[in-house]
Image (tube, rainbow, N blue to C red; front, side, top):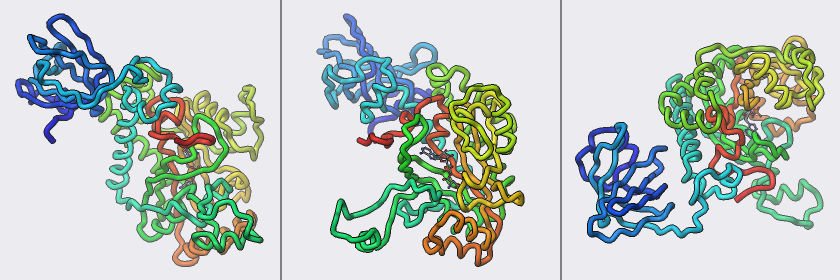
Length: 456
Ligand code: 4AD
């Protein structure tokens, strides 16, 4: 490329004295009699580069905020070890004009306002920083698994079975509204796949099939949930990291989850100091210290039954009543992690009725070897379990839930042919980003959020 990334220029001394070309969008512009200043940002860094324009006799037309420019000039050292570009008016080419109705003309817009323009909000510091954190965390997750002998597998997005069994799938069909068919069966027989299909809520079931051959696998892709949850932490389309490990029991699953999180957060702190300082200054005071603290201590651990007791004895006035057997709501999860443990905490051994059919049944007959990881500020970011490896017990659990066993015959085969103890978990990628940036709404950590009633 003929132009150089602004990040390269500001992070090294090697360009000083050289003539270089940069491209970017105007963040601010100041003009005085003989000299003008332009702050240019090309997205490669949170930091802008300052162009100092010696106007001389040349004709100088002050650029507007939002315009895109190409500038060629000499790199010089500015104040406080910064780099600047010295240029004259003829060194500046306008690539794209930007009229005065550009919505990001001024700074300080609310996140809600920014959400109304997902196509432009990335040009702000906040979203520049979020997307970089997202990218660095994604690379760190791959790095963690690759270093530890996991195989990256891609599980299907269109599926004929509902992994979580909770009936919250988007349907995939090529037949629109139609009254021609006499029954549901007839309708689906005529549909694209010859049976009912949907967008996968999780790659776990196929992940288990790969793990019981490759030993350790992980997926990293989108999952879809048609839940009617209009909350700050639910998306209809979210990115899901799902490791699955053969010969692993619940304690191993917990150990992997903690090790993985500590690894990727350490990597983030080392790779993105500017972004973390930015979020610390503007979104969550103390964020950096909180993340440092998280990775230097062991996570907490409590059983569901103990957690219920803690909640009942808390004296708090929860909106959702607490009794053994209830699903933990965000308010309960946050109380446990923020007030009781004041750190990340694994909650284990949930009642079997509120968890999925595939979870290993505990000897008490009431609970399953499930685990959720709760973190302060967000609540649940990981959900996982040891899987039921016993063929008969799995069939019994599926029958209790009136599931159609035919749809799961491949999955059941795993328990017939060389079954092994195994387990895994799902990490919601956007929830991890919320936790590591202090962003309070999941809509602000994904490029184009899809939520109930909203798509663009
Ligand atoms: O707890 P969940 O539903 O677990 C599963 O899907 C398992 N099959 C995972 C496994 O064991 N392989 O989802 C896992 C995580 C949650 O902890 C949460 O972080 C995220 O996925 N998640 C969502 N994130 C954003 N929007 C939603 N609607 C989400 N639903 C789940």
